[in-house]
Image (tube, rainbow, N blue to C red; front, side, top):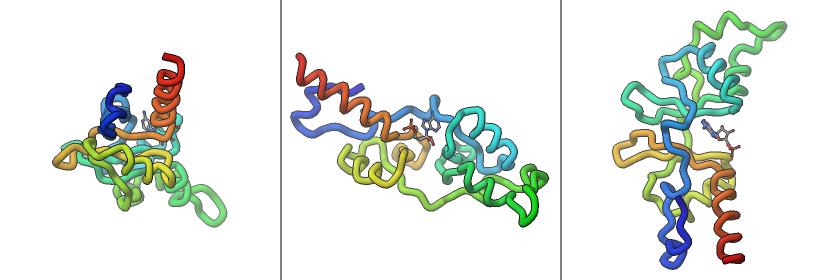
Length: 148
Ligand code: AMP
């Protein structure tokens, strides 16, 4: 949780704002695209993190990427969904933050991405930082400073 005193020394870190891993919808890299599409659709998100069985971050899978793969010339090839694994389609080239990184670093990345994955020291998935979460906390903080 964000505390106003922390602003004094600019000590705000990514972990003060992130949504922790247990609240983040994700898939495993060995899951097939059908499973990924189900999780994406049920969660209502268009992109979610991909992890391995040791909870290490591997990439991101998105609905547009899946649709691109199953889009044939004349029809949508739904039968491909259970034949292709997430790891064959995911975007593995993604920016990522350490939970102890300063907030300034995160803000730079959030200019171009709606959310950034966060890892702990050894690459274990820790959660995500979303633009919405940061804006919500900044809004709260500004009101607190202004009206208290
Ligand atoms: P938001 O800023 O809340 O609209 O989130 C931006 C993006 O972050 C969403 O479109 C998702 O791709 C991702 N996201 C946000 N919250 C979650 C969550 N709990 N689980 C998985 N992905 C999420």
